[in-house]
Length: 338
Ligand SMILES: [Zn+2]
Ligand SMILES: [Zn+2]
Image 1 (cartoon, helix red, strand yellow):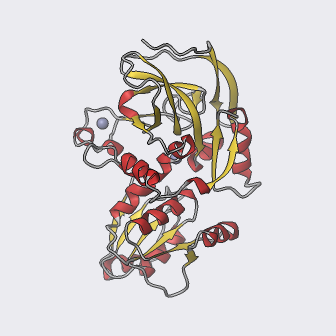
Image 2: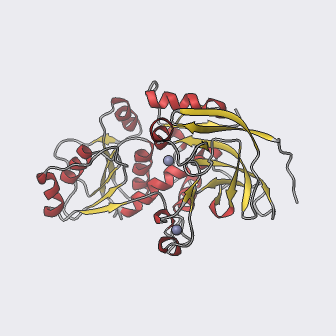
Image 3: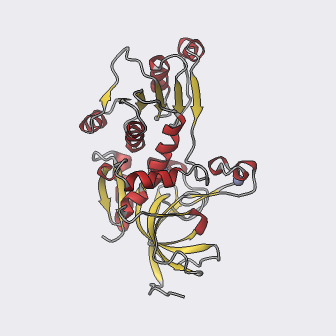
């Protein structure tokens, strides 16, 4: 068995209570037979981590947060994965429910999750199930591997639009997932993608990437609602052509309300509203493999969305910066080599 020299302790960023993020030394985790020991090289900070750390908490305390991560396998009892560079699908399915039996793992009703329900990627090392490992192509970086999670979520949503060549797509919310979704849409044949966005900095950034903002009265073939807010949804219902697909992706922060007139748009235009959740990790439809292939073949570019790279020990400061919106950011990732 290959044994890579390992330290006895590691640095982890763990949530001890709401708002109480602690950078601490921990013993390296033990690994089960179906797990490997991963040395985490990069972990993205997700918008959902801000809510998790400062408002909602994790399912129990303490929990190491971080569900967007990639690294190198430093120990595998069977040596199959040792030395391999990987990204990690963060959802741990139960494998027993109907959804799992259909390989529809995102809809599992009894799942575990790295970084929210169990320890995740804001750590130097983590025990990870072999089932969840996706090998990185040689020309895909660890940072891109960490961004494979949001890119797969965007991929999953865009696939549901069933875009035909030349279609125009509308997306609300020009955050990292919205921008990646726009790029997926273009790579899948869309002629033009426009955004609904209020934040002047996000508008400027989207424009710098060649994406404009929707004008009044414009019509689109299909749309992704990426904000989880009522007003952008109402705008989308008016802007999408009859029988168009609308994918609901944004997590609502509060009640979603529609006026009777806006609601009637769904009826009168016979709109197709589709939910999307997480990403597909099935043998027959794997958003993770599709994403890594597209990055590797330069059909999808995501690395230019990284605005901040911080060492793991500064992750808590980066989270506070994101909460307070002190600087403009798109994607913030840890670079554990720093
Ligand atoms: Zn996320
Ligand atoms: Zn299940």
